[in-house]
Image: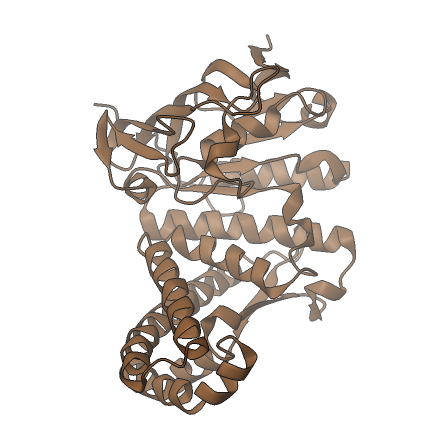
Length: 397
């Protein structure tokens, strides 16, 4: 059995990789997924670059890899919609994604997909054996991504930043996704009871569970933000083309947890929920809790909120955050994640491209990148390059 690839020790700002083993996808197979009836890629240690015209299917490959982690993938698509759509049909087919991975526990085959077009939940397997969900994949590899759709993260609604935050947490805490889902169910149950004028004893029971989940979710977010901020500070480089970020959480419950033990915060939040039943009933929703928390990000050198920075600065901040998060995952898990960068270099100038390629080399993780122009990757030495056309992926000599 093969173990994860290992990189030599290096100073953090050298051009050689960090002393950290990394997860690696060795073989990726797609069956009736998006634009591909069937496709297979076999790759090695080098960065993987997929180039081709817009609409050729480059992002589809990265999306397939993103399904090797919990959730709905980097596009947040409905599971039934990612199947291949045959010509003249309105019903996407059942689909499958499988990968041979050198992961945390050695060589393993991960697979996921829909068994029938009508299925509502994807099935997941490890070495052919069923597992309850894709959360089990986290024992073998972590996948981090950056896509053009995330460019508006800092100026968009808080819900987008919470979703981003929860993916940051999930990469270092595999149980976080289940807790967030349970929190959302508890909130819906409370809102429904308020709407139906449910008995106080039922509300007491729901609010008891809700407070436990709320504090657990908030505490995990706080811990991850604190660790990520420490990671950013440890690798701060004011000369980097990707400015360091200052990050913090803005939420009433997070402030409570910072002031008192978790059990006391649970009791305080239960009292808030009980006292606010009338107000929340009138509003039709719960008006306080971690479902309203916001992630605050600012430009470290300028001390300026990210939302007020230029578009280029926001892009650079997001790239820097992604690299810092990858380092944090590697430090906490002992294994660098697989990094998916969709069309990231297209709007970077030559200096920032060079800075990104150097930072990726230091990181030492397996990186999959896409772009329309092969020339944008000319400075990326040793990359494995593939040309993508509709329904077809071909290696480039």
